[in-house]
Length: 96
Image (cartoon, rainbow, N blue to C red):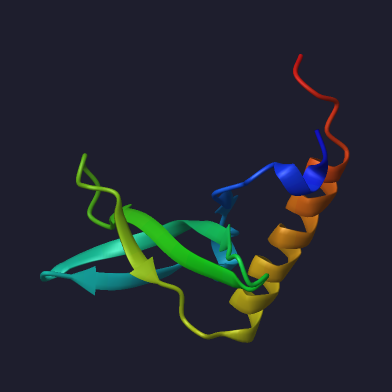
């Protein structure tokens, strides 16, 4: 089977946001602390990212998605994470 014959539907990675880059956002009056990113590789080769977090007050609240602010350090994190994921995928050793 050739690489061209394999249809890949989605590529996504989960990235922990370093403590110094984390931020808070509000949804329906509740503050959330954003701790992770989900980065997707789109069919055109560009990246899309969403931030996820939990209520800042603690508890077992929902894990909610937020837009990633357009900050240079977050753009750099997304880019570096995609580069690292590419390296890891390229070095895979097949099914264990």
